[in-house]
Image (cartoon, rainbow, N blue to C red; front, side, top):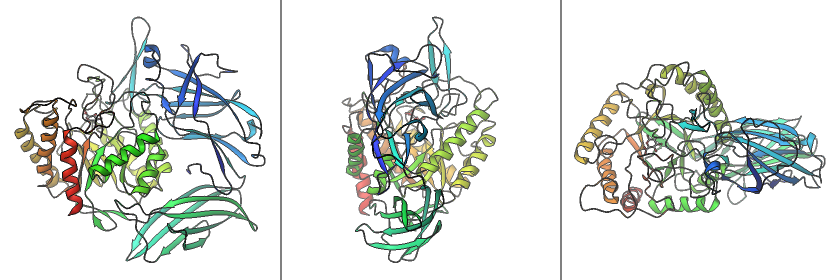
Length: 591
Ligand code: BDP
């Protein structure tokens, strides 16, 4: 899937801004004919939940409506017009005037439609989008809805972040020629000092394909003809962690002597490989430092915001971090592109979080039931999960920053049925992308001698909270127990281990000279204890702290205004732990 872009043959129009907004009545998400009569306006992109001073809107379970008008640019005659929503969380339906043109389930991946038959260049038209935030056992992530005695519906779920909903990413109108480039896939390898760029292009309509690779100065580095092929670049500039060197692959669909369509794809030449217990980028051992993050900020919820985008990456750089995980869903494509340009390594995760009904990480809802049964996480969820894997790989396959796919976070992988559920999904992912290693984030309930799925993956990701959820406050015991468990994993699997979550909550400004939970010092000291263990276990090839910043969750008796495991506060001010990590990771860079 190609992200829309402006090229010599393509144009785009942003539909971001204020849209009319309303909650739906008790039924539907069915067609809304005509204008939406409402006093409310909602910003796009933004989650709608925290924008209004309304409990009813914040707690709403079901469909909401967004509507605006737009005008097709006059020049878009003789081309195709598409609409694209970068995300609608968790389900979206789109009408152009009164015609339903698109439906999509899955809250963090793009979708759209060819709307050429329904619009006319130069004319105004109405766009209505219905968005549904319901999570069930047929969705990823899963959830359940209960009806209270007074008739209100309540959403339960098994993951630890607020169920923000709406249009949190951009909406676009774009034009493409009738004969066009429909998709392109690029993979790269390195042979000595030569970079090998393999490409495959799909066109819609009969066209010859021509590709030209240019370096960062715009000089031609190679070219090829044909829908698939290879360009060999001698003395290639490599894409490296900390150095996001990009070539540009100009793809042309040619009809006769004319360029019918042009698309320019950034290409980073790099290789990724798991060898024994090592994770290699460009043949060199790589140690991940950084965070699990969230798309989360005050008022916007999960709304994409370029100021937070740049600021968060600045803070990663300030920390000396080289990577992050898109916990626990795919992030906006602008984030992936920024990582490509700035040499930040990404572990790209599907939205499969909370596949664990007995609690674990999910503090907002535990049904204390078996996870993989015909009435809980079963065929419906597995189909939705497969769909998410397909769409994620289709969207992000060309990003050099993405070095590994994470197929799930903290599933109940020790429970019966886990193996049957996951094995086909791992196979599917490998078929779709044989070029990248696969991983998952293992839950503490499924240690090395109980996990049914670890052997399916190339890299084992571990989320551990000794000293916090397990034996809170006792760091000496925590350190010993943590080390013993990692030694167990190391002995049982000849695979790299990446610590994908470790951390403690701390309330910014709370201090103590003693080992006291929730203080900044305890958070810092707990991280330091974990680092001593990481440094003593050769199989550990990475550490990503949970979390980059404090974030909003469903608030119960164990969460005060959200999860406070941030090394930064929600408004991105450093806690004491930030300085410890900064010293460690910066000095690791200098080695
Ligand atoms: C882990 C989850 C993460 C939670 C974290 C926590 O993967 O989403 O936020 O624990 O409890 O279980 O802080």
